[in-house]
Image (tube, rainbow, N blue to C red; front, side):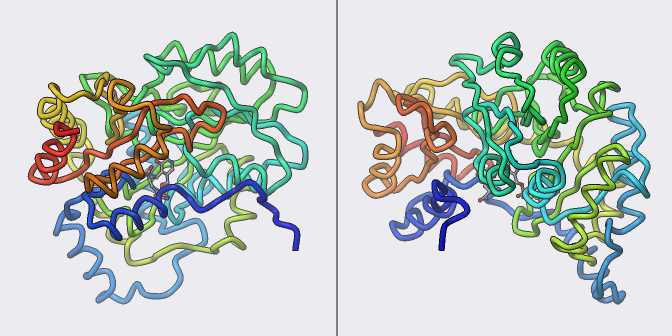
Length: 378
Ligand code: PMP
Ligand code: GLN
């Protein structure tokens, strides 16, 4: 059998979580919170199950949940998405991203992505015969150079995928970045896939610049979101996609045969829980405290860093410690020092010199303290 993805190997998240478990290491690698979701939300899921929401949800998702999402987006980003025709509830953002790509990418289409790039974009594009065109984000601020992006656009370019707050660098797009993207996408008639799973995890008083806020951009964008990141339950695999009707129609043609519909009782619970805006507006200060606590603990270590502006990830530069490749360094940290991290060159296949590892600080203070003690000893 000829592989459809000959260059794809097992995801680094599976690799590092297994290594962490095999070596009894603290797992700051795969991004998931080390604490529980709100018991109120868990009770709401139990209630929905007891109330009998145990059969298929409607294909686009629970109507109430879509209405609440529509209201949330309108209040945060001043853009109204039609709950019936422009919103679909998905099995996490991963399925939303995959479905948006499946619905739009034809053989030989080019898709621009920024590296380091989250690992699911490239294989998803390649599965449908597309080709990713990679643009390197540069140290220290990892901001896109829009002139370079423009130079990479050809008549085959179909889509640009952006992700902000950015995994793994923690970079945010400014309003000006979004305006430049909007201009470029309009001029070349491009689709945009805006992966905004960390929209509620933004620090230092900065604002998340959702594609929804820019009318000419929103007209050509799929926006993907993840409840797992926002409500500390990545294992529930719940998310959503919003897009204008002409795009959502194509999205749903795929969604109905890709999964048909997703977990019904959890949708019912989220429809109630999401109505209390404090449940997501409290996130920036919650995670900023964690970031600051952790970075204060490791400030005298030999790792160099610039504080992350968003997400629950922090890059650590180890160039003062070792000349190893980041993959070897991360492997050795797990085996010898009992701390698992992500080597970032896996998001960055063109750049082997990337001497950075990624740590997840969505952990309890006591776990962060233990992790910091190890990092300080290296
Ligand atoms: N996009 C990015 C940038 C992510 O970091 C993740 C997961 N951490 C996803 C998409 C996938 O989200 P989900 O777990 O909801 O599928
Ligand atoms: N998105 C998470 C991360 O960046 C992992 C998700 C996964 O394991 N697929 O760590």
